[in-house]
Amino acid sequence: MEALGMLALGTFVGSVIATGIRKTQDWSDLQKVLTTLISAALAGGVFTFLEYLGGNALGKALFLYPVGLLLGLAWLSAETAVANVQGANGPARVAGWLHIVGLVVITLLAVLTLLSSRFRGLLP
Image 1 (tube, one colour):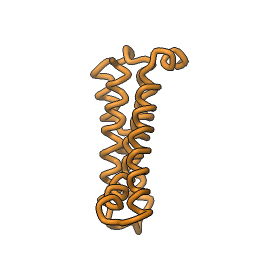
Image 2: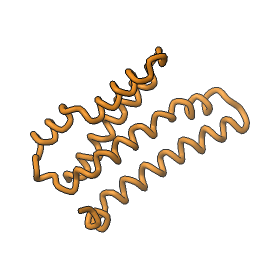
Image 3: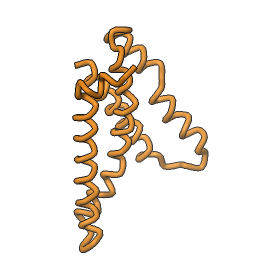
Image 4: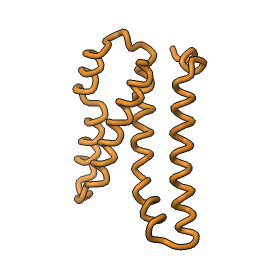
């Protein structure tokens, strides 16, 4: 169950970062934007929360946090896909549907793979 929790926490933080990227208006100071977003992902608050939840008991489940971050960030592009499905015709609409289906399939495969006992046996 710890593995699912870590994956969910990583996905949540990744979604918060994706929202920050989507809402950024001024990209002129790229270093400031990247520093803020990276610190959100790796901030002490997240790891303090993890220590509060389970400390060293999390063990191998801790490796699922970065995977959750990547899944949350992957869904950043879903807004474009939905816009293509709703407003475009022809190839753009089909590409939008394929994009959404691809994101769902990748997410499901990642979750099923990562939560399998066989995969967790491979972790250090």
